[in-house]
Length: 139
Image (cartoon, rainbow, N blue to C red; front, top):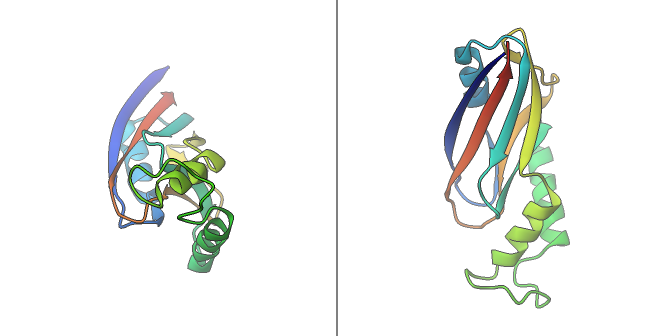
């Protein structure tokens, strides 16, 4: 059994999904692990990780429109506004999505479906440098 780990820094341009599939796949290929399980973990409370459609960009726009309706910026319900009107909505969005993913690795490649990609989902309006920890266990 072998293990490998690294941390990717992902610069986000602001609210929305950033595709990290290629970077993750390249790291997996270079790890030398042929078959195993990759765990991804984002080290933030106002961003998350998603496996999502990678063919039609309208899917990503629809997701953002849905979350904008579900958790609008500046909602008077929220008292936590330390960093602005998008602060608490970003935390709620992260709570409703995922901070970690598990992706099988088969034959040295991510076992994603044809239309699946791995995304960092930035929930703040401003961009930020986000850290995603990758941990691969296998043979």
